[in-house]
Length: 151
Image (cartoon, rainbow, N blue to C red; front, side, top):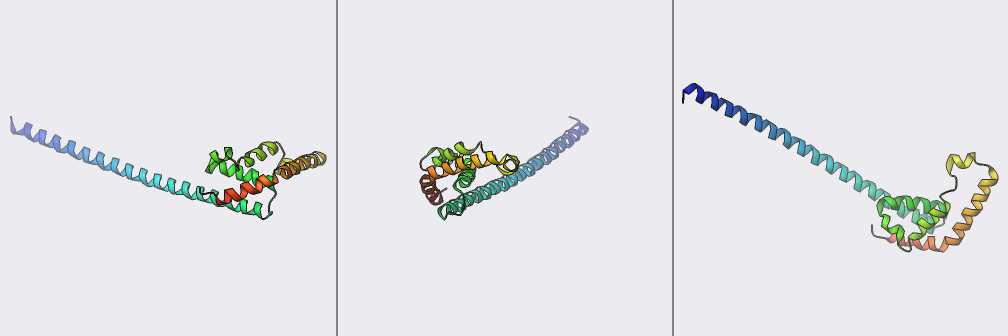
């Protein structure tokens, strides 16, 4: 084999090795960045979940101390539980949050409530208060249980 061919093959081999090393280094950096992003995402999700659990406990405490309307608490707790532990909404005593939500979800809230006719709002309030009164004991028991529940 002539020397010029040997040198050409050696240079081609070194060039291939250099390209492969560059490719491997780039892939390694990409994987490292992906792991960092995933770790950040997991940390954010964990923090968010802990925040939701804390909100559930605060709402439950507010129910126990009669600082919030039961219907409002049920709507909020149900919404938070859907993200944290949706399976609890099907289990007693927590099922009451879903039941109350289903009974009052059609009622106007916020701006819609302000724009609704007064007589209709009063009718909805009577209906909501009746639902609260009917489920008051179950809501209090569920609030106590959810506050102590290990998430």
